[in-house]
Image (tube, rainbow, N blue to C red):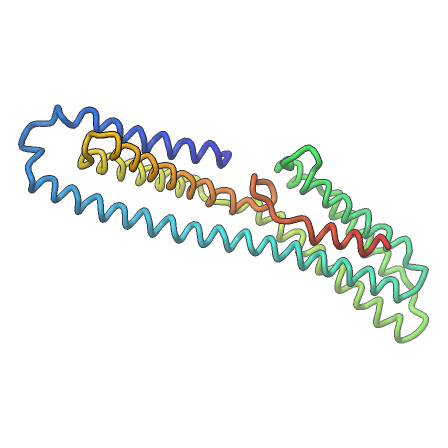
Length: 255
């Protein structure tokens, strides 16, 4: 489900619960408006608000960690591509076909994750095995090299290690796209927010200032939920990881 839809669902639920109770609470029996009942409502709303705030804080921190991990993985992969190109260049001119294959692979990766048309297609990213076959070609090309001395032997070993690391890290990066947040967790969180605003509507005064304040709270919580969902989808969300490491790597290996 798209992050915008989830955030709008949370906003509609919270505003709906608030407006429902603010409009219909005057139909409650008089003894429901007693001071003791209002004090109990304030305590219950405070407990629920604390619970929602703690959950939102933990989820925002976890989602930010996921996004930072993906960002770091892109940066590390860019650095290893540059180092792999340098190792192949040091090996000798016979590695030119392998270097060209590496460059084509990075170009294809950039086009899939950061397409010119906008957001990438998640399904096509997860189904696409051409990138991995391309890395297999790179690995096979390196294995076919025939070192003529100890230095070339060392460079071949280092190139194989770097190419293998890049392939594994790419798989980890794409697997991360499928993790996301469990739908049941989002539904429970939205339900808590809905119940919280029902309680707030029961104790809030019926005036425009109170309504605006509660609307601001609903917008803030919906925005937090939007950020949580987006940050857990660092490759195909509206908030994507930076492509600068890949761009710099392409500039370096194209020289």
